Length: 163
Image (tube, rainbow, N blue to C red; front, side):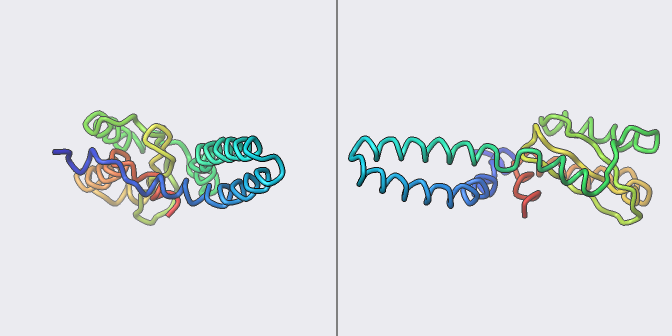
């Protein structure tokens, strides 16, 4: 039996399909027109071009979305001494969860919040607010950061980023 943590979320794939649907419909219309004009060869060429375009669109749909969000928020890398505990927790939880260590960022705001952005576990960032790091105890912070790693492990990063 597979545990909940090991099941990939189908939501991520749905966003890619939704982004490619208009392209696929347009491609099918073009393939139908080519079939009328050039026969079976036109239909095959149209379908191949459509398939390639849909695959490319799905793969590039969210490329760089995490960097864009980080830049828009103004988050800074968590490399100062005030973030040592955050880095230490994330490093340990990364090894425990079996996912790569994401980019760790800090957003300078007094609110208590944490955000996970990216397209998958290999291309993700965890953004913690300075309020979260200063107001929570180490145990509380570990619980919040652990939840972020659950999202990474389940494959919910992209759907959380886009949703």
